[in-house]
Image 1 (cartoon, rainbow, N blue to C red):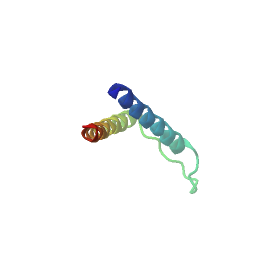
Image 2: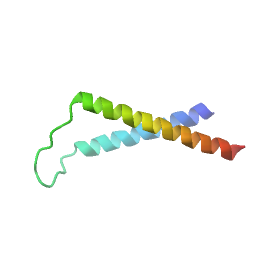
Image 3: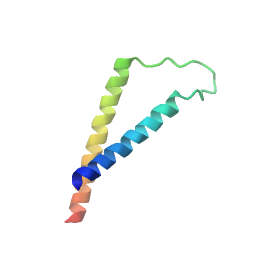
Image 4: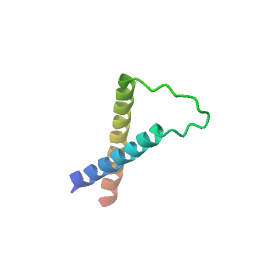
Length: 70
């Protein structure tokens, strides 16, 4: 059951990250200036940092839920 909840949290976070990435790719830059896309290696580093932060926050949520269930 706990694994299902964790997987659900991860799915929701990944969906949100996907929406954020899609929004960032949309050409809604009012100044009309082209933005320089980050390199793939920069994206990988940012992605890993975000995944680590999300995992840490999920652990915190799980700890709180676990304490509430006692």
